[in-house]
Image 1 (cartoon, rainbow, N blue to C red):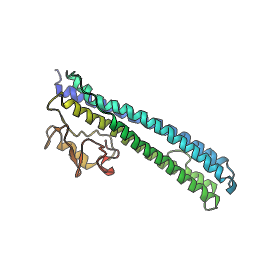
Image 2: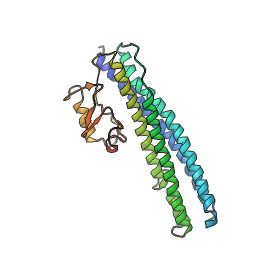
Image 3: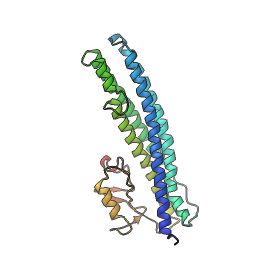
Image 4: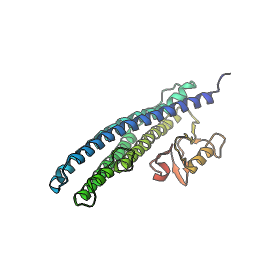
Amino acid sequence: MALSKEKIFERKVKALMKQAGRMEDDAVRRVIKLLSDARKEVAAAVASTEWQAFYLPQLKAAIERALEDFGQKYGVEMREMQRGFWEQGIDMTDLPLREIGIWQAFPEIDTTMLSILQGYSSDLVTGLARDAIKRINTEITLGLIGQKSPYEVMGAVGRNLKTKSIFKSIRDRADTIVHTEAGRVLEASSQLRKEAVAGVVPGMKKIWFYGHSPKSPRLSHLAAARRYAPDGDPGPIPVDEPFLVEGETLMYPKDPAGSAKNTIRCG
């Protein structure tokens, strides 16, 4: 039995969503590897430095170099990753349409939004690295003035990225930044592409789709998925209109116009 165009379209969209998920996971793994290398450098500097005030400037300088290097590499990784997700967002619109025989030449979309989102992510990465430097230096100082033992300082820095420590919290924040900002770029380019395609394919509409990725999905997002489903009320909406999600108007999931609680790690 031949599949309907709707089923063919839906199957392609879901395949592309899975591909995007794999891209996100791969990006996270690369960033965590960078962070793991930075933690090892910091731990080695702490372990090899004599615990005297005289050596504090050298120790802090070594920590700053390690984490600034991490921040720079993380920033480059984020920009390249976001470029890939920008292209993936375009494919999220183009490829399903081609699957059902729509091959018109679609207008190119402006990449200004990509540059803006890359700049925002760069600020998040820089802030993360600076916060890590500040927190670790505070622990070092507490050790030097006798408020903590060297063993306690090492514990606060972290013996790996999984035990409760400064680096564990950095890892969690880095993971959140990648998942959120990757998805934000994908959804932004997909939205812009839909708007461009709507001029060529009249009557195009969009739905809010629940991707089943968060461990604890937001009830308001599940409600939006039901409300804007093909059989929902109001059902699919024109591509240039916003969704109403938890009292906020969002053009797409992770829309920067939404609050942090309504967009961070949205699936």
